[in-house]
Image: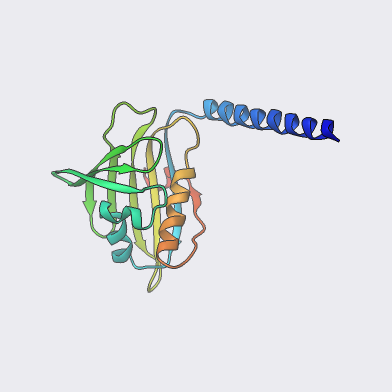
Length: 175
């Protein structure tokens, strides 16, 4: 009986190591520089969506991966901030703000293993909803859409409904 538990534990450990190696290898095969996009229908009008995404101080109220935000001196285009909550703080700056339809921000840190920025596109989708698309232009090591999908789900939950984010062919967006 004791041997069965030892075999099970050893097998689970080997399986976990194999999974980590598989994810790492897949990550290495993805292009580092990329353009990716994800879209979801959010149950709120563009002005309501804009109020949440354009105010860095609001981020911890709906993004579970952001514990707190430190405001930095603003750029000529809008706010700059540092997010805390993951492995390390990450600094961002607003590149372009066209309320309530388009917001572009970028990572300003240069010492990270990833970088780039997000463009938020907000289009009306019916009387009280929006089609929100995030276009990511950047460089990452693993996964191109997971963070965007997680962020759109968090935004939808904050506004009262669980969205179903879907990858979008960035080439069709004029990205």
